[in-house]
Image (cartoon, rainbow, N blue to C red; front, side):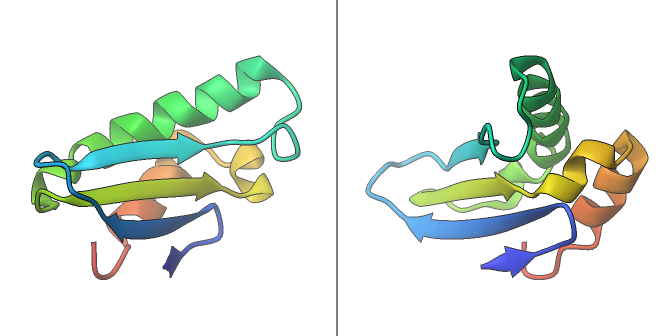
Length: 86
C-alpha cells in the first residue's frame, strides 16, 4: 500500500492478462457526484500515463482521501510523480 496526502494506492495480483485500474471516491470524501467524478477524471488522467509500467495480472486501486478535494491538478500530479514503487 502506497500513501500520499491525497490518496492511497493498493496493488493486487489478479488472473487477468491486462493490468486493471480503479479509482474509489466515496460520498464521505466528496458529497456531490460532480466532485467525485472530477477527482476520478483527474486521477485516471494522471495514472493513465503510469499504467503502462504495470505488469499484467495486477489490479491497481486508488482510494481518494478528503484532502484531494482542495488539491489542484498540479498538486495531484506532483503526488503521483513522487510515488515510490509504482
